[in-house]
Image (cartoon, rainbow, N blue to C red; front, side, top):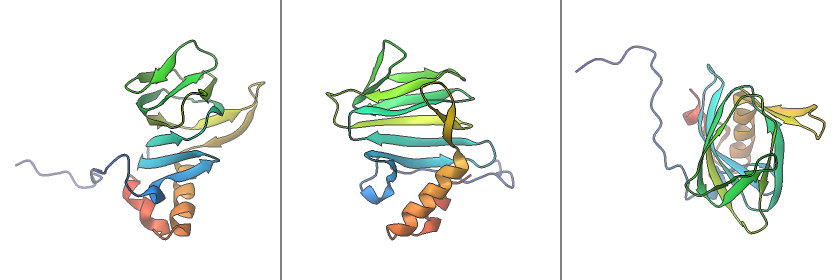
Length: 160
């Protein structure tokens, strides 16, 4: 058997779509994320995004590539002609501004996203109006888990 090198972070193996709704962290009305991995060294994070309403979720851009896989429901970007439905894989190139919209006929959307770097929120003119990154995600989780009884340190199992 080959020994594991010292300092290698532990693996993560969890049920992605949880049975306990307390694991979903609200980030906006009817918009939640479920952290799966939050890497403070590389800035990468993996999470599920769940939206339970139609309409615009956010207009944003990323400095790095984003990868997504739609688990349930569907969504689209106003700037493109395609719709990402359950089973769809999505690649988002760095730098592009896009407006995520859940269509009227979708009551719940869940998508796995693998993101590196930041998510930069922009207004209609492309001006930055906010951001999130691994560290803001961790703080949202700490606050949420502290408030719902799981404890602020519940998020630590996802931090690498």
